[in-house]
Length: 147
Image (cartoon, rainbow, N blue to C red; front, side, top):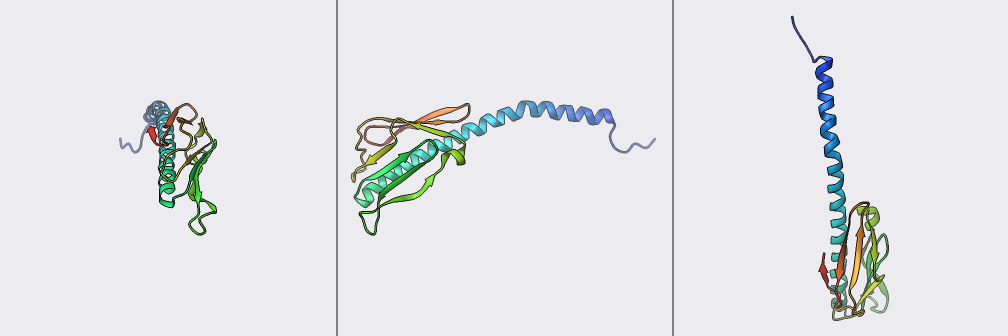
């Protein structure tokens, strides 16, 4: 007797096994992806804090880090002419890019030409995913101390 192919029972067994493996693997994968998105949002904030500090020192004028629920960006004096305020780099839309929202204790942080914060207070930025949240802490001098 020449058999070609698989029987119905063999096919159903394979489909059931694949379904069981997927049932355990997919939720774990979603959790890992959300953790990575929160980490990426935190890294973007830390990068823009460093950018704001360095721009203030390089240009010799105040630079401002702006934060709202869905984006973060830096403004400083322009190079030509120096009095005009311009956006430095690009505005990071963390809500659409990483699927997280932000909640900050201060909506802006202004850095003086020495690269120091003019607020002299600790600022906490919460990065909130659907089930996971974490925070970035910016100290009184304007430096990221916990990421």
